[in-house]
Image: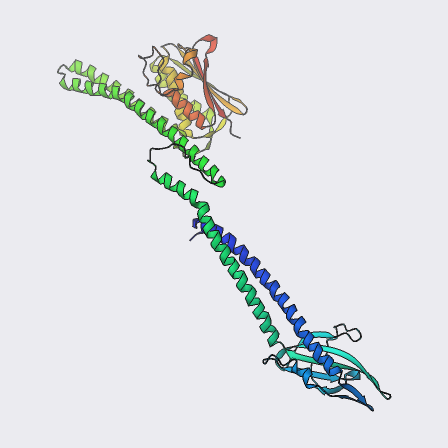
Length: 463
C-alpha cells in the first residue's frame, strides 16, 4: 500500500509511535550506560574491600615479604556462583609474590597517584574481567617496600545485573508506549468523529442538494469544509447556468425546427414545380440558419471555462486576422459590403487556443456583416498597446444603443427591431466567453464619426 493511501489515523499513529520508539531507544542506551556505572561502583567497592583485606595481611619477615591471604577476602567475591576470582601480589619492580602471576598488569596509560586504587577492564583465561588494584607500603628494620595487590573477577554477575536493570527499564517504557498508543488511538477516534459525521451527512444528501455544509468540524478542517462549500456553490452556479442555457437552446431550436418540418411537409404536398422550388429554397435557408445556430451553440459550449483543454499556443494574431478576414470576403461581397483590414506589418503574438480565437474573429465579422446594410464598410483593425494586443471590428451600420451595449453579451439577447436580421443572439456572447478565457475582455464603443459600432477586444500580449 502506498503511503498516501494509508489512513490518517495510521499516519498519525506512526508519527507518534516512531518518535516515542526512537526516544525510548536513546533512553535505553542511557539506562544501559548508567546501569553499567552503577554496577561497576557497587562491585568495585567489593573488589576494593578484598584488595584492602589482602593488603592488611602483607608483612615483612627478615628480607622477605610474606602474604597470608585471608579467606574472607575472596569469599566476598564469590557470592555470584557464575563468577571466578583471581588475585596477584607483587613487590618492588613488579616482582611476583603470590597469586596468579600472569594476571594482566595495570595499563601504562592509567593514572595512579600514591595509594589511590585503580580499576580497569581486561581479558583473562578466556573471559572478560574487572580488576581492582591498590598499593601498600610495608616495612621492617631491614626492608621497606611498596607492594601492589590486584584482585579480579569475571563480569557475569555485573552483566546480569545490567541486563536485569535494562529489561526492567525496557518493560516500563514499552508499557508507557503501549498505554500512550492506546490512549492516542481512542482519543484520535473521538477527534475524528466530527469528520465521520460529516462524511455520513454528505452520503445521506440528495445529489441535487448543493447547500453549504453547516456541520461543526474541528478548526483544522474548517478550511477544507469552506473549500467544499465554495466548490458546491460554483457547481450549483454552473448547473443553473447549464439548465438555463439548455432551456434557452431548446426554445431557440424549437422554432426553426418547426419551420423546417412545416416547409418540408409543404414541399412534399406541392404539385407545382415552381412553387416547390420556392418552398425548397425557403427550406434550404431555414436549414442553413438552424445549422449556424447549432454550430454557435457548440462554439459557446466549447468556449466555456469548464470545457478548457489546457491548450495555450503562441499565436500570430496578425496573420490569423488576415487569413480569417480573407475567408470572410466572399460573404461581404455577397452583401455588397466593403470588408477591409488595418494592421501593422510585423507579428503581434498572444497565448491561446488558435481554433477559439479564429471562432471569435468569425463571429465578430459575421455579426458586423449581418447588421450592416448594403454599401457599408467593415474594418478589422489590429494594433499593440503593451501589455495588450487590441483587436477592433468597426462598421458604419446602425450601431448599438448605449442601453443595449451590455445586454448584447447576454446569451440569446436580440436588439429590439432586429427580428428580420439573421442571427440567434449568440455571436457576441461567444466572443466574450472566448476572450475572458484568454485573460482579456470585450467592450462595445461608437464607431468613427459617431456612426456604427466598434467592438474592441483586448488580449494579453505573449511575452
